[in-house]
Amino acid sequence: MGETLVHDLIEETHARQQSRRTALAEFRPRRVLLLGGTGLLLAVAAGGTAVQVLSTMVGTPIRIVPVGPVAHALRRAAWHDGPVLAVAGAVAVAGALLLLGLVPGRPRREPLRGTDGRLAGGVSRRDLRRVLADAALDVPGVDRARVRLRGGFRRRVVVRAATRYRNPANCADLVRQAVRARLDGFDLMRDRRVVVRLSWRDD
Amino acid sequence: MRLVTARGAGDSKGLGMRIMVGLTGLLLLGGGTLALCAGFGAFGPAAAGTAVLSPAAGRYIADHDWFWPLVGAVAEVVALAGLVGLGGVVRDGVRRRRPGMDGATRMHARAASGDLVRDVSRLPGVRSVRVRLTGTASRPRLAVTVECASDARPGDVHAVLGGGPVARFRDALGMQTLLVAVRYRLADAADPLDIPSDDDVEAALVPHARRRPVGDGGPGSVTERDAG
Image 1 (cartoon, rainbow over the protein chains, first blue to last red):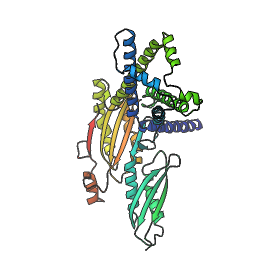
Image 2: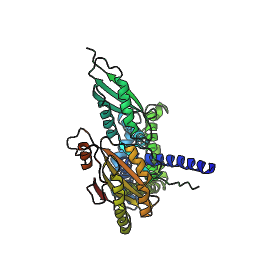
Image 3: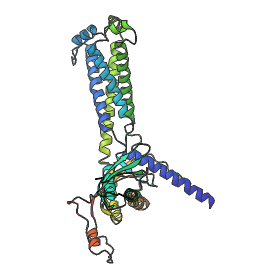
Image 4: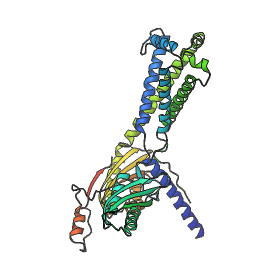
């Protein structure tokens, strides 16, 4: 019986981890434009180079880029010239942007907790913000509420609410409880702390 | 005890293209940085004043017959790799939207999706369900969109979905590796165009009335199926 319990616990933990990996892989940004655009650029640039070089070698040159003027300009330009520095800077920035584009970004949807390793569920951040703002607005006295999802490591829901009351009393706590209760209904895979910033009338 | 280790459908997608983009980025960043260093005199004032295409470089190219054939060969390989990578990205994009399976599998999926849609539609707060079978036979994927009421609890719906309906759908298709991706959409309570379902209207009008269970042919939630 004890062995069965341990097995069940291990399987459940494994399934949760697998579910987390599946959800993050499913909702990770695809970077289709970056990958496809780079592939297209490489194919066109390298293909053009290959055509020009190989056609010149076999004696029937196809001039895609005029080699003479370019070589002449490169012979006249020094490394410290302004245009050369500008092109070098642009090339370095383009390389840095390409590398930055490969960093896994924020998931497009907030993944939900699950125990099936092949099941991924997610809710859009916009829907989540709207529903949480509605929950804050349901608190008596709250006139305006805006919700932001913040933090990559210290994840939190930041609620900026405003009340027409001059004495807010425990309004902030009520908003926090309402948003917390609504957030629990989502059972997010990566839990978030609720931070409430309340403003009130002081005239 | 058997621990099923299944790779996500997106684990190796575009990995080759990502490596290629990374190498391209490294090459551009390294080359641009070296050129900037040379221009700003990091390698000495003499190097900064040297022509970009120096006479020494011209002589080197002229003295080595293998230079241009090597340039042509490298360019061909890079162009081919770019084309293959581009094709992979396009193919992955298409496979995420359209099924790449035989007609019999798609027909089975269409038949089995009815039960899945019905099971999910009966869950509290669910208004409509759309399912779409995508992927390939080796990497099948079911994209499910669940429209919920604004006060629904997607966490509960997701827990129930993972408990039974999805497992039954996999069993019906014989695809235990089927990846199911569920997107939950919540209705906007303030949207005047948002029309509540018949059940919601009835529940609001007669809150404590006893209700007859909705049968298979009964007026349930609006559903749409596109499995295959």
